[in-house]
Length: 214
Image 1 (cartoon, one colour):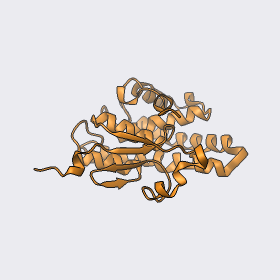
Image 2 (tube, one colour):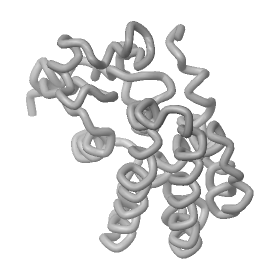
Image 3 (cartoon, rainbow, N blue to C red):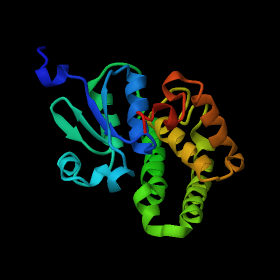
């Protein structure tokens, strides 16, 4: 089968170093062994580079990431992860078993839709002085829901003994919890999984280690 020229180009990740969503994509690329280029989008500098007309043309929601891959642009991290799962070889990011696959998607959505969006930069800027308490409340609430689920699904990793999209979502969210001073010791399963994953090369290092000079 002949590959198009678009498919031969490295993907380009437009992201911010401390963005959970950008970090998820970096982890997924690392797990799949995909080389990619990065274009930094500083969410703070100049009032937020994501708000420019140039970036809006890539991502109309003016959020990160935006990923240019195979001649298309994708703007949601879970969509990017599932696209490379369906188009690239390498370790599976979604289990073959349909029940486990559903559990991975459930955990991923709980984090990506139920926790992270209500404590992201845009929301916290709107909250103002109470932003720390706001972030703590919603991360605490989300982890209280996530912990019993992971007690049921986890073995070595979030779902069984294979790294999946759920693990990719978990690690950046634990980083956020620690950043906003949530006591992760309350959630022993979450803490154990995070410690295990941080020993895997693709997960190593905080976003600050990939700050692209910011």
